Length: 72
Image 1 (tube, one colour):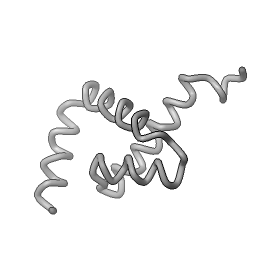
Image 2 (cartoon, rainbow, N blue to C red):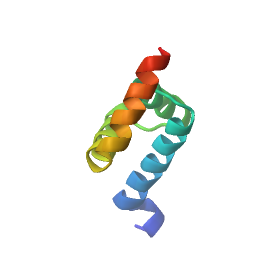
Image 3 (cartoon, one colour):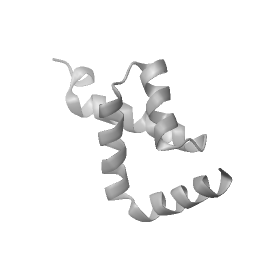
Image 4 (cartoon, one colour):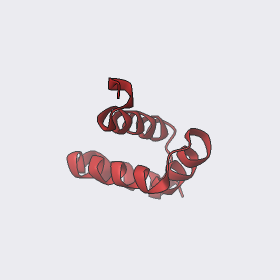
């Protein structure tokens, strides 16, 4: 197994793709759908990584959620 195939590398890739979704002001559900369709990432993986990012960056995601909810 090479470094690029490691679980840590895969999680980092998913995290990077989630960050791209955030740039486009996507909801969690939109991001999960987009990564499933366009990057072949299982929804459960995106959801788990998203939740971990929320834990690590609580203030950011609270503000992000408020911003997204105010636009809907």
